[in-house]
Image 1 (tube, rainbow, N blue to C red):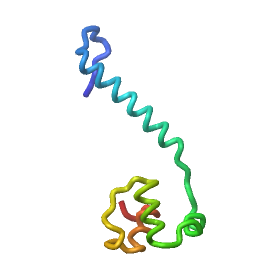
Image 2: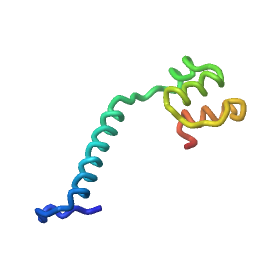
Image 3: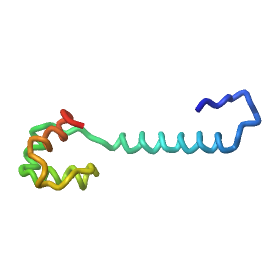
Image 4: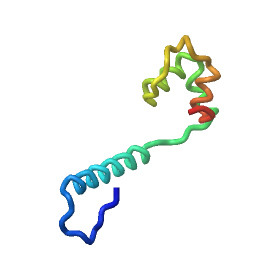
Length: 85
């Protein structure tokens, strides 16, 4: 949606939506600023089993995944490494 800044009689709902979008972008930038990178060695030293990787992805990352019994450890490691989305 494009807002014409030269028009002083803007629709209040459009201005409100623009303000909400601005707030959302600021909140997402703040969340992304808290993210840190982790090396493969550090990750593998902390998470050794399939269940530990599954809990990390579902609890900490908040990824929606099927039951752990239906996934392979290779699939979970690909998710963590970014090879799968």
